[in-house]
Length: 247
Image 1 (cartoon, rainbow, N blue to C red):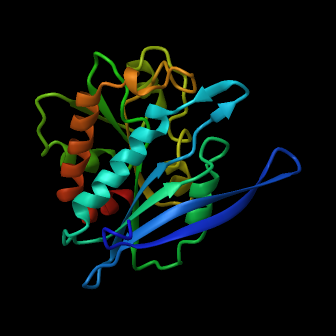
Image 2: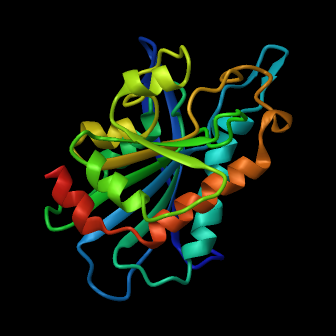
């Protein structure tokens, strides 16, 4: 991130796990400071922690969430020298798996400034290998139609896009999963604080939190298509329409 020209820092934090255990983590925060005054701040997040090694078993986390972190790094490179109508930050969060602690701490440190509108774009599990080539954009009910309008301007011959604000809809389309998608990843820390958010993901993964979450179970062409789609979305992002809908 520093080599790309971003103002980068480690953001250490601590949290309580269980009843008495004090744990620590650190986010990686990189911001591209705009050369002109802006009234909007887009914050892209992807958690870089996973289950890791437990006993003799290694949980590699190729989809959850190396896919999101790889996308985060790619997007940072794409926009390093791009003039955007908003400030943009890239945050690799820690301790997502056991309670979204990194995202919660990051949100708690945001300066109170009502004149700056914040949007979180969260990237998590972008590389599910499935016949139904659908990229999901999960957002609030208030923002759903405005987001659908902006995404409809992007075309893809490979991937479909589904905008939803309903966990029930996501679970039905994912054939039997029972997940609270609003609370399932770091975007919930922003939602809980009242900020606008969009979660991009490919839906339920049968390899989730399994030792089989490996590169060999990723559809790399579909993954690349999904990341390119998100890149195009950010390039044409109209924050005014999204935030007016959120209000």
